[in-house]
Length: 73
Image (cartoon, rainbow, N blue to C red):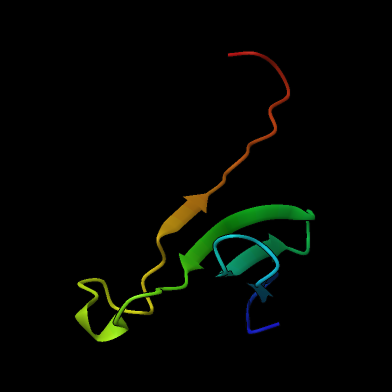
């Protein structure tokens, strides 16, 4: 676990056993068990100093929201 904010906890995973090594962050709301965010940062094989994007900005970020309703609108 790398962060906690209320009931949302964030885990960091390092994935190297694939063609594109990467770091992934997954945030889970422990009250519901639902994933709220997934971020992925791919490793750079060339000179990272020349990368236009700061290293703390992910290449992919997905956020998820869900609502449970009693009836159809």
